Structure formats: C-alpha cells, structure tokens
Image 1 (cartoon, rainbow, N blue to C red):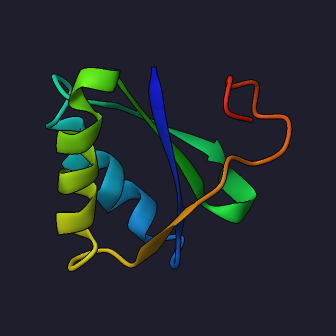
Image 2: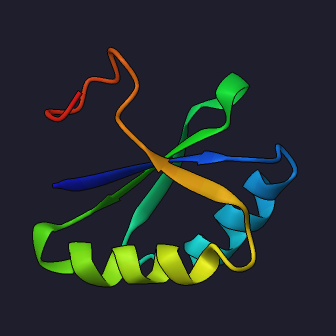
Image 3: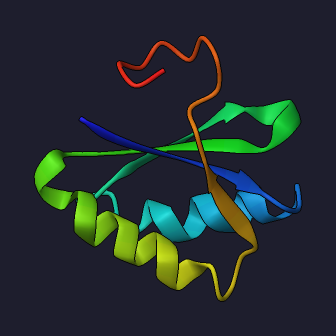
Length: 79
C-alpha cells in the first residue's frame, strides 16, 4: 500500500475533504488518523499513487493542507 499523510490547516475542512475524496473510492481510502491534530491518512495502491497524489495536489487550491511525514506509532510500514 502507498500512504500519504496530510495535515489540514482548518478543522472545518475535514468534512469537506472527506466528502470530496469519498467520491474517489475507486482510487483511495481516507481516514482521520489523529483528529486532535487534523491529520488525515490517504491510502492507495502503488499503481495508483501518482494519480492519487495528483488529485490531492489539485485539491490544495480548494482546501489548505500540507503533506507531512507519518505520525509516530501510526502502525503503517512507513511509520
């Protein structure tokens, strides 16, 4: 699996992000990883990582967030 972690700038953006990315269920799965810090985990397959990154980059014009390293102890192979 390929995993991206993003940190939202605004708590209210989480609902919007989840709603938008929910329409890309064929491409990625999304979960709020650390709610108190507004860290979201986006999971995809290695073959779709580039396309998923492209969708996320396009969303940066609408929702303010930054890509971050995996949080400590998240249980993923990268973390």
